[in-house]
Image (cartoon, rainbow, N blue to C red):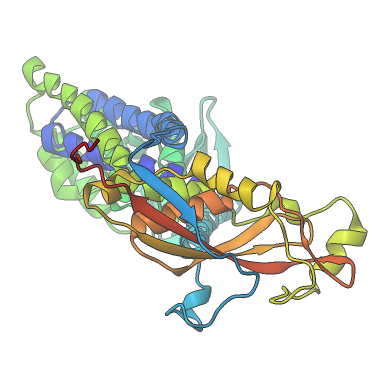
Length: 436
């Protein structure tokens, strides 16, 4: 479910950020641009819930147009379906979900490491309380550019001695404008969308706006722009301990100097923010494309962690881990209601993909899955596919099956393999001549 949510979120964020970069980026309207980026974050994090719910609840049954049949069901996997060995055992959806979670975990670990480095600097520095903030002076050995985090401003002793006043004005502007809250939202989004280049680029744009606002605050206090620009040039180096913080040397120096001399954007130009509306619509439209929606729905239906595997009874769950999955059993697993019940379930739940209907795609999809000793369905995979959309639909329906009556060996419930051939057919609706 979370990967489907993340994909929809990244699509919406990508379209919105593209509109922002094309119509608004680079203009001297820092407060408006900042609000627009925060709005994009909010939309991309909240709207996908509604889009995903719509996709999951979308039922377009094509009565009278399609036919769903099941072929001969076997409890033992055959060897001649065209896919053998390693590739036959891959469940692409589970693989994608596992890759996603690994990437999210690594990204979160990276930021936690950065936070640990910040705390290390805080512990090593000399602290002075100034009411609204805490000044932390550290040794020059850290080679860190001045930065702020939370309610603390950190700088080297040499920076404080030479240009302390200007640096404090700059960093205090970050604190006063609550830029740290923006960064938290940005990093949460990146952890959810670590694969999305737009999420990383948007964070960079947000940090640039933070620096533009802080630079503008310094100039408005009466500081000589030339002197301040020299300060930025001198402090343009320094190790990036502060990956999570607002730092004096964030953003490109040339862009910041250029921005200081730009005229403020006209009101007419600010109306370009309305371009966000069609961008949102485009993101929703792409998510609703049948092939895309099919992938999202299949990913959402895929169970990586089977909740039925953790039974409250230790007598059942503990031995299950040691048992093999049987390919031949004495009593086969049975769907509730038998073969007729299984056929009825498929007829009620399978939705013929629109793209497959438009392209006149038909065929027999063979799905292999496991019925565990509790009767739960797991490890569904395509043994023989026909078309991506048909394959995903067959997987989705199998993954959503209710519990079966498990197979038996020597009178005991056991886990067993099952293969389910599902025939997708389009009925011939060509008008026929009437005969008496």
